Length: 220
Image 1 (tube, rainbow, N blue to C red):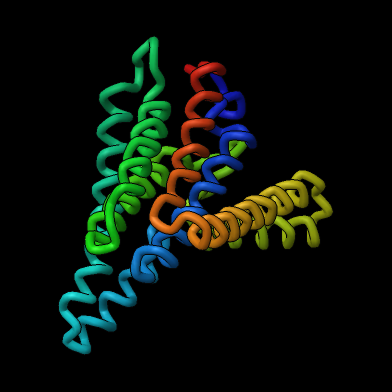
Image 2: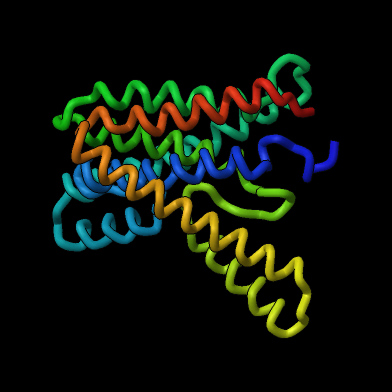
């Protein structure tokens, strides 16, 4: 099957995953001690700053999610290699389902255990960023914006110089994904204000919805 026909690369799936990506970052930052679930560059920066100031416990809060994110990437790669040719289940379905279960569990973790909550959320994010890297055949990310911003801007520049209409469409597609990530962050902020730690359930529901669509529309 061609990559462009993969349901996991379709716009509906990417919208759901990107909403969840923005939501998770807002949730971990606003509700779990100002730590990023996805933006590991920010976590590494804050880890270094706190380390240089001798704030050891604070530095730990930032480095653990980074390590968990890396473990999530490795776990997704393991699942891909283990389940790639299975007939009844696609490996990406397993990843999305496990993400949803992990985040469902996070909502029961109290504030006193924010380090655990953030690490589990980052683990789920790492698995997602490794598993879903394309939309309609184009490389993109559902959990961060810097690469998408580069692709969007480059595509618009390509259109400016070549008048190639597909380049313009690609640029607007990537700018749209960035907007969806922002909407996910807005949803996260509103949900945290209303439901505090339990707000992450929204992200779990988004992922279960994506899982259901992938289950109904099977791919090779």
